[in-house]
Image 1 (spheres, rainbow, N blue to C red):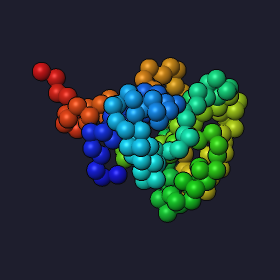
Image 2: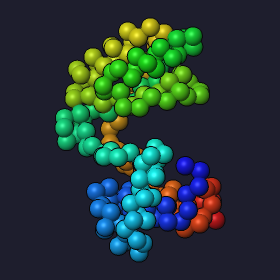
Image 3: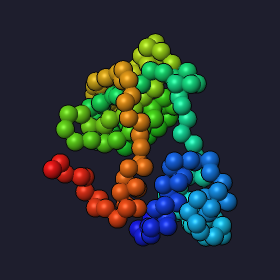
Image 4: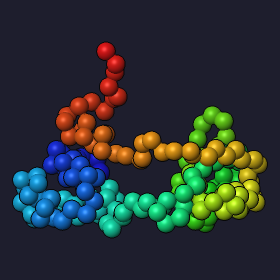
Length: 165
């Protein structure tokens, strides 16, 4: 979506803060008509900006308490195949093509170190993977978030990060 107006941004902020908020509560919280709130949410869902029913799951609570970041060096001719194969490994949560050391970065979860080792072996068996480097997350201090960015936009602030004075 290219054109988010202040009302769209306020709706996004409310949904980020409370993903389970009902349309009636949303319209009341923002002081807009229920139909306005409903149509805007639907428009954002249709555009792919919002994922209907998408909820962030606490993976630790369901047994996936090992988090690893894997940097993968890839034969560039095989990159698409590597990404396709990574998509099939359920423990791979994200895949990014990166610059710098390595070619692909993945966030991987596991139930324990043995489960992680099995996932890493699956990654190493992918055609086109040359080598991997794995770093374990010991503690998450800041979860993935978007609220500060949308809040800044809603306040009419610049997209640029705040500069220290």
